Structure formats: C-alpha cells, structure tokens
Image (cartoon, rainbow, N blue to C red; front, side):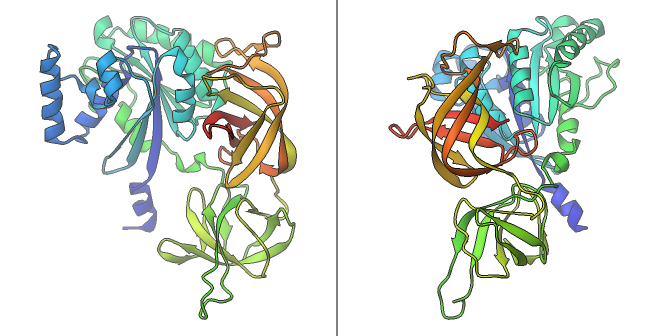
Length: 423
C-alpha cells in the first residue's frame, strides 16, 4: 500500500451542520451514524427505549446528538455538540450547531475549522431567513465547500419541481456570497433517502449521496500550501550532557511546506537561517505541511520563543500593531466597549489590545453596513480596528484561516468574548 493511500485513508474531514429550527439536523446526523454503522447496538437499544418512553413511533435518531440534559428536558438544541465517527475511507468530526437565531456565536465556533458546511432546508418551507444567515456565516468563515441538503423530500412527494425551485432560490441569493463550491442533494433524513444509501424515489437526481460526497470531496488543498507559516508553540531544550546544544522549536504548520535545507526567516528578529532537521511523531522527516505538528531545528543558535514565527525570507505575513478584523461578539453580559481593553490570542501569541475603532456593524441578514447603531451585543458582527501591545504576524483570513483568526478574552472573567477574522 502506498504512503499516499495510507494518508488519504485516515484523512480527517470536519463538517458543520446548520439550518433553521426543526429542519432535521439532529435526525440527519443520527441517520448518518446509524446507516454508516457508527453506533453500537446498546446505543441503538437505548434510543429505542427512550423513543418508546416519550410515546413516539419507531426510533428517534435525533436523540443521538441531542445528548445534553437541558436539551432533552426542553426539546431544543442549545450548544455545539461534537460527534466523531469514521468509515473505511475517512474520519469525521461533526459540529452540530443550533438553528436558533440567538445562537449565531455557536455556529461561528463550530464552523471556524470546518472543511464542509451542511445547510439544511425544509423542502416545505424553502429558503428562509435562517438559511440566508447560515449561508452568510459560512461565506464569512470561508468554509471551502457548502452542501445544501434539501430535507424532508418525503413530505413533498419527492417532487423535482419543488427541489429545482429551492435550488434556484438559493443560487440567486448565493451570487452575493464568497462561496466557491456549492452542491445540492435531495434527502429525507427521517427515512434515509440519499443520506448514506441512494434513493429509488429520486430517480431524477443524478448526483452523489451525502455520505459519498463527504467521503470523496477533495479537502487536502483547502490548506494554504504556498505561504510558509510556522508559529512556535514551545522551545525544546533538554539541557542534558548528551543534548546540551539541542534547541528544537515545536509547533503546528499553519501554512506552506517546510523542507530540510530551506532558508527561513525568523520573526520578529528578522534573522535568516536554514532548517537542519524536522522531527515528526515517527522520527525525522524531510518535509512538513499543514496541519502537521513537528519540531524544527535550525542551523544557527538564534533566540526564538513562544509566539515567534518561522517564515520564508521573500514571503512574510503582515506585521503590525493595528489590525482590522470582522468580529463576532460572544458575550451576553456586556457589549463590545469602544476603547475597551482585552487579552488577544493569535496562533501561539498572547498579547493585550485596545479597541481603537468600531467601523460598522454588519446586518447579518442583508450584509448591509449599519453606521447608526454601533452597540455590539451578543451574536452581532462588526468591523473593528484593534491596537495590540506588540506586533502580530497575520494574514488575511481568506488567505489563511489559522494566521488570519484571533480571539478576544475578557481579562476580568477570563471568558472568550469574541472571535475575529483578519481583513
């Protein structure tokens, strides 16, 4: 078996689900787990028992993801639930995010690392406000692939005309968005049509099933392989007699390809040197690319510490203390403060910052800029300029989702109050 095939076989795909309330997200995830044989018999028996106790018919697969106690008591989904499963082709992490309008921040959290966004639409209702809202967030978060699952096709008699209408509605709206790869699939999560197994009731549909798409969509090029970015997380100094000269820089490759012998530039010092060794989990390797975690050794004894970055001499990130970001505000206790001071995390760098300017608030439903009401409350998105206590090494979020993202932390409560995308 070739090395490439081994890597492909265990490739990890992260996807997020979004849709309006009761569009069937939890049922869809339950159906995928059940039909791909990713749940155990005792889990299935427990589902059956719970379904019977609730007086419902059959087996309610939605209960697989609605695992939080509060959800079960209230019958709503209120947080990001992560589920892990695998098929012979791929490993998957699902971020199941709530459909309610007040949980935009949860969708931002779940979608920030996703390769694919599944947007569910109820075939009876078509494109609604929440559909547009979730598509806009998927676009802002630069999720590379969007799959529009037109669900509950069984309730519209698998009508192709209705499916075409909804596809047309969504495509017209999507022309305003920055989404490069959109696919449409007619499904019934409840019955299982076109989820894992192809349905004979949609003979007019010639595309893949949802699971086939997720197993085969090309995601290895979703990372930035051009701009070398290696934020240092930890400096390894064993300080033993045997290794008294050893100095390794551990971290995760955020962009580009690092190769043994490459000339590199160290930030913020500006010194150049060469890579002498790259150590991975299985020992020495000749190169490293995203999202591998490795230890890099360089030729000269130069001072690098956590938060510094290894790049290429002729390909530097933006270096500066004023950064412009699109923020999603998470805090429900107090709004974003103009001139407010916050702790900021960017890759492995921790700094403090002040809110220098709030440019505008973004109306998430229309993409219009609001200049009158500048109060940024929970779930609001705003374009903001931050001044940091020391320079950050950033790229635009659209270019690199790792070096282009930040989080803000309230220093008093130590809670994360915002996530931001560098513009």
